Length: 414
Image (tube, rainbow, N blue to C red; front, side, top):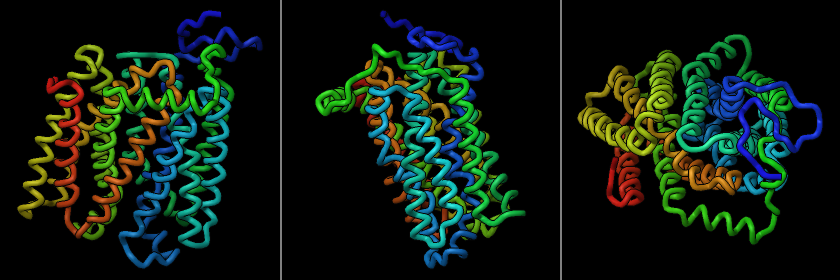
């Protein structure tokens, strides 16, 4: 049977059983967003709890608290490459549902961890489970859409995901007024279990039987060779990885910045919410503008603007003019530009990969996440009581991404 692209509210014709209830466009975007949100909550919900975790588990060095976030992200990034080939062989649902169940189980294990080492190990495995969710959410979108429409879906779902930085730290602080830090992991387990039930009940398999690929070394190696030798796929993956690393550097050290640099830990949640809200506004703007201006022109222009703002922020930080208010203003502007770049870079990296969407999504996500963790860890561990490492780090990251983009496009920036 010949495959044709199906609308979101249609089930694949290869399914003989009674069709599931129709899933409209809005519900599809919301489900994809909740899949990605579950993995994002594994980072942002925990930020207010880092001092309590450090005290409870006797973490002697303050910068070591960052490993609670870093271990999760390292587990996520290092295992992503496994799930794409499995999903290309067995379908999306048979891989993503076990991932959601494992994520919920590991969240519960984190909530009962009795030592720092046990928590770090559980966080790594939790991240490995999250890798299935994050990778296949992208592959599911690619199964349904392509080109600018795919970028639109990703931008709309990312807009919802970017509400996580706005709400999660405040929600975390609210939970901790009535529960210890362990209650955060219990809440995360319940959330991911709910998403699993939603997906199981409402989303049909998006990959048709005739597009299933055998799980052989030669086939996987061939798909990886295509991904890693396509300059657009690899290049824009690297661009996204570098920018993501700068973002992670800020996330790793933001709690310490407000606690130690500014002596205002009470401003962490509202300031993080403002910065995250501006980034969400950038993603929303991208969803509206991308079909008019195109992914390439919009993302490159935003990247140049990010570099300009990062240069100004570096000057402010290096001259000792930094305050809470300059940080919020300049970091917000950088995050608005990030919101215009991120989804477009991902969409451009995935565009040539229609025949191996699962493998491509997992490989690109692995490169992006592991590379981002490495860059972010360098910036986070460089925290010296000031915002200088973050400000200069964003400038270097933006300039590096632009250099790669110029190489991809043969020196044509926009």
